[in-house]
Length: 324
Image (cartoon, rainbow, N blue to C red; front, side, top):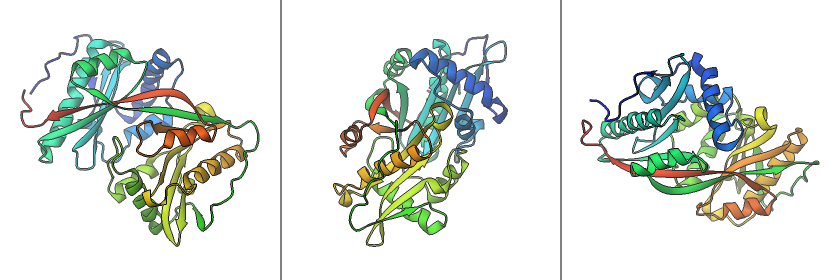
């Protein structure tokens, strides 16, 4: 069982190891500088990637090394849920290496689907809008546009106004017991169901993934209740503190029947106030511009602005003939 694209002889490959983290940061930073003009990764982020629950570095990732032993490319296949959807991260500025990594990673995606009995597997890639070489590679291999994400930011030049709480709403800050975490997780699943690339995680795996993030603790999860029922959730972390001194809203969801009541707007402005009080320069988040809710309009209306564009590309692969 071999790939149809050969890795050039001057390169070798192996799975990444935890002690590769700093070298991987250098690889990703160089790629970021070439594509968007600034480094967009941290050591904490790479460390979390290498320890992602449900991810087997030995079978699901490939680090390509140049003759001097430094990384020249990296790819990883992350199987989601029952492995009918696989997200692939791929980085290399060397076209031949990128092509080889694409074949390795998509082959592993097909294997994951095959192992779970699926006839097809959906594969998602998320790439910077500016990365034309990778876009061309993916397009030539049958990947099509799926959606666009904007990274949004608001700057805090003074203390942000603490918002008034919508009538009948109770704020629960922090999730320090399993009951609170279950309630929050159920809101996440229901509010994001059907959105591009979202696949619910088993509860234990969701908890494990959050606890593995060096930039997160349970005090950064906020739930809104109405009538004793959890109806909205906001998950923050410190992923942008090191590089930008900004807070990060990693996830914000409201149950469909409770939308239009100002809950998302409250959670946004509440995060802005907390970040400003903590001395953060701003607050950042990512939004799917094809979100079935009018999320982009909401974020613009509260003063956030788009600063970076990321496209989601998708292909559907058959899993039956893994030797082809």
